[in-house]
Amino acid sequence: MVRPVADISLGGCRFAGDAWENVDTEVELVLTFPALGANLPLRGVVVRSNADGMAIKFHSLSEEQKWALRKHLREAEHTDA
Image (cartoon, rainbow, N blue to C red):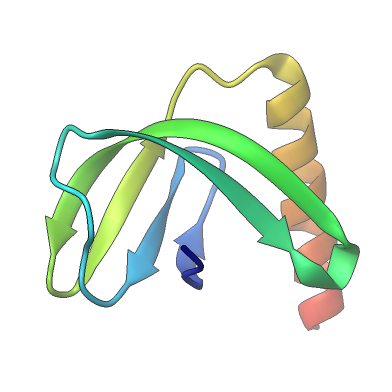
């Protein structure tokens, strides 16, 4: 399933539009940064789920995943400017 991310930070992300999972559902997702040609697999739990969107709190991130997420967010910020 492909959905655009509405908001993202080191703590989690939010998808706009109708949610497809319930609160407290454990999820595995792959964030794709097309402009960077990068994919990042992450795990999390759904903390909000309604018609306005679905929010996921990341958990159990390794130091490598944290480093990659910081790097990709920083680089994506510069490509959007």
